Amino acid sequence: MKDTGWTKSISTQKYSLAVLEESAMNKSGRYRATASVFEILPGQKKGKRGMAIIYFPKNDINAGLPYGARLMLRSRILPIRTKGNPGQFDFAGYYERQGIYYQVFLQEGDYILLPGKKGNWFHRFLFQMRDKIIRVIQKNIPEQKSAGLAEALLIGYRNDLDQELVSAYANTGVIHVIAISGLHLGLLFVVLMRITSFLKYSQQNKWLQFLLIIPLLWVFSLMTGGSASVIRSAFMFTLLGIGRLTGKRGLPINSLAAAAFILLACQPNWIMDTGFQLSFAAVASIMIYYDKIRKLIYFKNPIAIKCWELIAVTLSAQVLTMPLVLYYFKQFPLLFLFTNMVAVPLSGWILLGEIVLCLFNSFTTVASALGITLEKAIQLLNTYVLQMDKVSFSAIRDIYVSPIQAVGLYICITGFSILTMLRLRTGIWLLLGGLIIFSGIKVYQDMKTEKQKGMLVLNVSGKQALLLIKGKAGLLFTNEPDLTTPGNWKKEVLPVSIFFRLKKMHVQYLPVKESCLIRWEGKQIHYLNGKANGRYAQSLGQSDLIIISNNMNISFDTLFDQTHCLNWVADGTNTLWKIQEWKKEAEQLHLRFHSVNESGAYWHAF
Image 1 (cartoon, rainbow, N blue to C red):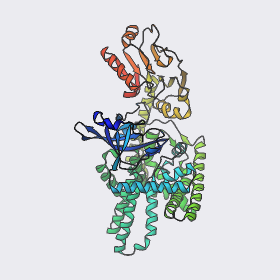
Image 2 (cartoon, rainbow, N blue to C red; image 1 turned 60 degrees about the vertical axis):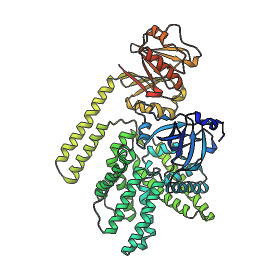
Image 3 (cartoon, helix red, strand yellow; image 1 turned 30 degrees about the vertical axis):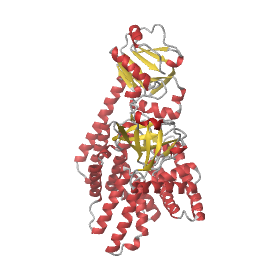
Image 4 (tube, rainbow, N blue to C red; image 1 turned 90 degrees about the horizontal axis):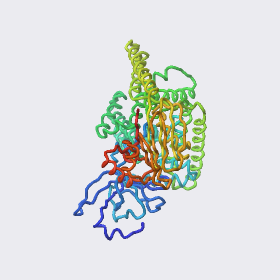
């Protein structure tokens, strides 16, 4: 890291101290890390600011810093803001649930590495173990996509995952394979139980078995990032181990409820975590429905029995997770059963092979041969999932289910379960009630959609994006053909389209000139573009909305006299310093000014 001389005058500048809470990881050519940030207050006192994500300068090869590294920063600490586009993933809320509220974007010369390290030995041990495992995998599995999937399978390290693969695994309903979950921990538990099975014949040896297995499960859980689903699984295996030692085995559903209660008492924010909800819903669903489904068909052939048991587990897990999948992911994989039938057992064998690879890494010949075998197996798995994703009817997409409709689905499931499993008439009324709730909300939403009319300025960094909506049709104005490419469309536009339930979407490109007038439904919208190297047209005329882009050099006072417009919006192409100038001018003239960079997307209904 170059020393630009700013450390010599550090006492005269405002600066911050950051302590890395994890090793810096390379993502798309840029290192990033979670850190605790402290502000150095007057008198050299240190005040805790909070947790932040630090983005290091692009192509900075020296930014691969370890856990506990201390950095002196002079870059601005910014709050993490959501884009605010309807239907898009709420990154600010996601990080807030993890206790992370800020982000820091470093440029060349904005930080220096201080001597010494902070942190505790156990966390340092976990990160060292993770880094060592990653090196073993990358050494023996040279193909990049295969190595990335192997890292995700074994320790949940997803930075090297190919995004096309991630999308395919999600679309086909096997994303749980590459997201460390109870499946992985359960497999590890079974392997460790088999290895230590010779200790189960006496009470004293059972204690030894417990003290060997349970700590290893917790170390593995924490090393993989300690997600809600993994901690849930580790906690349940701990309860299972205690039950075996004491000779008392309660109902599994009670252990699940106890695990949920204790985890939420420690981390209340997990109640809003998608992984936490899906994990507990899946396990509860298997506990309730697996045995009933398994007994529906009887086989004599041992192979057929094992296949049917796998099908029964897959089907039972879907019962209580389906409403959540529809609500969060807006799609439902139709071929999940066929994909899971291959992906789950194959990924299990790959996971076992990776464990053996780590154990025999010192034996070069064995490790090399095993690495080649694993690479071929992972390529087979990836090819199968990608081919299933290409099937035209692999999933029902663009589904919009509201929270109330999700509740209605759960009422339907409860009623149907009571009717079929307990043979009680109460189930009929619950089933009908759930259907009425679901259908009633659907009819109401359809009526609301038919009448909707308004304009939306999307928050898309560096791009002009205005969406006009009438009923189920939308007209998108933009300056960038790049926005209509499949990747950007799926990320920026499709979630908005699903949210407003649009059936038709047309795109029109804005011309590169100082001002562009859009007349729509009796409204006049002026788009002012600073890219045209001009100020603005001499007279704009009456306007209902003025959108400013690309740091257009304007005078609010003059334009207000021309347009009498009260609504002003700065889109995602403007810089923050320019927005602050406009905000002051708008306040003096008592105008309604909205910056999508600061406040999210702008929606105006009429």
